[in-house]
Length: 114
Length: 113
Image (cartoon, rainbow over all chains, first blue to last red; front, side):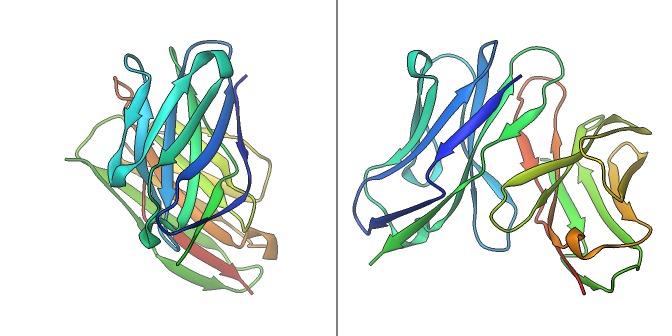
């Protein structure tokens, strides 16, 4: 079985400050990992993904995430928060190989304070 | 390129009335299709998934059902809505070959009154 834990359902940062959203996973086989962003009343949009290769992954809107197998983590970061980053962020995991169910975390709402 | 659309975008229905939400995918064939529900503060709950026409798997017991009458069409239905069915419903698709990324539609807001 696989699972995803997002620490902190709400995170507040000041505009221009570092954004750090935490995601830890469990998977019995090498996982594929994803971050999605959801703006109010919209569907989920892919921010970035890790499948194989380089463990530091860059995505849209200046976000990046690093896959750390030893820590079973895939934290999302952005050096400088912008007001437009205010949204809900979801981490997701898929097991590699075979038919793969997608497991999502419970989401983290990011508030950016001017 | 591939696109996914779902409708209606918003729906207000009385308790006990039927429901039909429709989702279509363009630009791909034989995708995996999903219905998720997002209730306030409860994250994404997988309701149904389908790996092919007429093949539906249910993740949670409920009074909702799903059907896949065509390769790229996925329908979420109910014969009698409950108050607890209110929420934001998301359709999604995923290519069976390669990319593993799941892509979402715009979502449908259902309010049962």
